[in-house]
Length: 180
Image 1 (tube, rainbow, N blue to C red):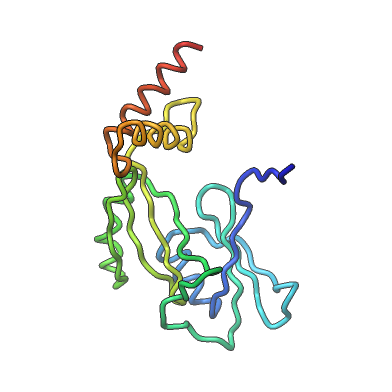
Image 2 (tube, rainbow, N blue to C red):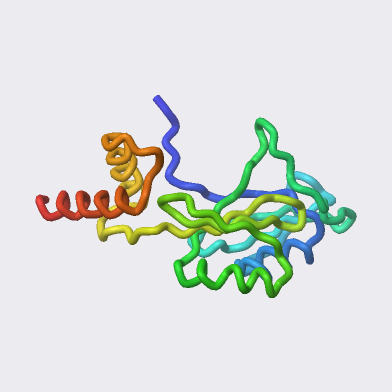
C-alpha cells in the first residue's frame, strides 16, 4: 500500500543571501515574505518563508557568506529542472513587459494546454509562470480537465493536447455533472 500524499506542503531551495532571496521571491514574483528563523539543521544558515499565493510555502535557505551563483542550476539526473507557479491570464499577459522593465530575461512558450514564461532566480533555478488555457468547471479540478483532454487526445491520435481537446474535455465534464 502506498503512502497517500495530499498536496505539496512546501518546497525549500538553497539560496545565497537574505536580500537576494527577498529581492527575487518577493520583489520579482510578488510572494509575501512571511517569516525568517535560523535553519535548525545548519547553524550558519537562515530559513526564509514566502507565500506563493495558495497558502503553501516556498522556503529559502540563505547564508550571508555566499554570493549569487551566477550560472544556470544543474540539469542532471536527480536535480530539479524547474518550479512552476500558477498565474492568472491577466498577470500572464502583463508579465513580459514587467519582466523586461525589471531587466529579467525570459522565454515564452505555448504548451498546448497552457502558456508558460520561463525565467531564472539569482542562483540559476529555472522558474515557470504557468497559465492554463481553460477555466475549471465548478466541482472539478484542473487535473480532471487534463485527464479528460488526454483521453481525447489519445482517442483522436493527436500529437499533443490542444484547445479543441480542452474545450471538449470541459464539455464532457459539464455533461457528466448534469447527469448526476
